[in-house]
Length: 291
Image (cartoon, rainbow, N blue to C red; front, side, top):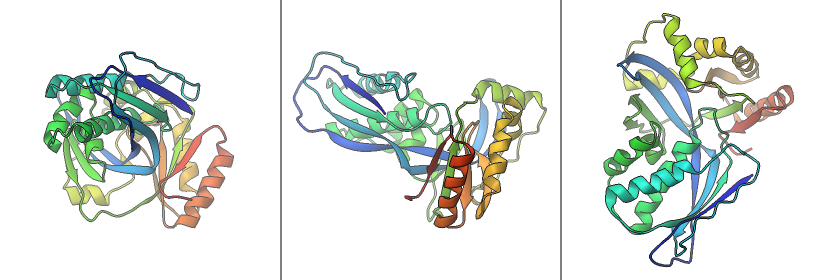
């Protein structure tokens, strides 16, 4: 487990920490529907995984020092996105306070699960609450999209249709609750490299569909072939998940390398978790339901 303690100068004392969970997400599907000179346009169904989350504690601080302590669970992780988010909030809304932040990192890095973006969104929401800023969701998203493309989604933190470059968010009313098993391998996928392979393949862009059609077409990803070309182990993972009893469908999340399966019932999901943990002992397995 990584423990990062970030102590930053403040103007007044607040004794108690506010505890929050910073959840992961999975792309239940991903359609590439166009591009401009810099970015690809997408349609995707983002689904939060509340059973996989980083723990954040935050309070208004009274220290004038910065102290960072790290352990070796995720040694390459840095707190840059937290510092950047606090600075962006201060620049945008003009407050003078600084904060004590304690972060326990559980969301794996590099798998497209959105851990850094989720942390940024949690910081934005919590500073708004701590200081009583009364920000609208649009005001928070204006800051969030300067930090990362997925941050606006995490400010909603509910199942949403995500479009454009990630900035057009539509919460889904009456959404279905899915039983999802995540398999996070011990390797990552380079998003720029996956998109490079995708472009080189000459694959046509998907047609833009209605929100309801998108919601109904889970476990579809335009980047799967490109990611499998990038690393053939992804195809092996998808095959293994799909062969588990009760798996309705399997797919890759985002640009990889995390893969997932959707299951009919909790016992099948639990059995699949045990089977895949044995088959892939060096991979991390997570479930969207408590087991």
